[in-house]
Amino acid sequence: MGMSHRKEIHQYHQEEELAVASADFIIEKAREAITIRGGFNIALTGAFHVLDTYRHLPGAAEAKGLDWLNAFLFWSDERCVPPNQPDNHYRMVHSNLISKIPIPNENIHPIQCEDNPKGEAERYEQTLRSHFSPMNSACFDLIVLGLGTEGQVGSLHPQSMILEEKERWVVAEFVERLGEWRLTLTPVAIKQARFVLLLARGKEKSEAVFQSLKAKKNHADWPSSYLQPEDGAIHWFLDGAAAMLL
Image (cartoon, rainbow, N blue to C red; front, side):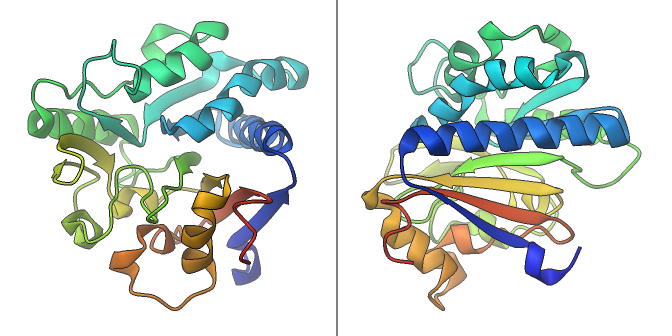
């Protein structure tokens, strides 16, 4: 894959167009992975602005004949809150996607970190390592991430020590300014993906989009500028408001 294709920017005027196009992209990558490798491994986030994308996935999958039996769902990050909380990422994905598709329970691998974040980080890493065994890399076909207003992606926050991680795939971190524990894939795991879909919408994201794509800034200040897959590609999906400074 040539360098020119390693970062692609897709812009849409309306939020609805963005949701439809990003859902189609996910289904296209799913079908490609199943055709070539027999299975599709995806890590999902629970960011609120990605939920519209998830709502379009069941219809897009049906229209394009995707067999969910060969899809495996993981999470890129999770808030360490009980699964009945509205901002629990598993709950978000379940209510908008999983409850509407014929996917076997054993293909779904949620993070459950409300009781023991550090212990769950180790357990989840083992789950991933055994799923991707014998390859010693996190070969996600696609990782879906949402962009935060300060350039955070997944639960990788500015100045986080996790940005310097060299070995672990999954880490728990207490985020001081939020007063809560988060679990997240590390850059080590994210950079091993075949594709990353990074979605941003709304003018409040425009500065983070600009800093990540155009400005020469310290990576630690803008984690979103840090995540180029080593052998894969990152696809930015933006609405007009998020792209207004480009």
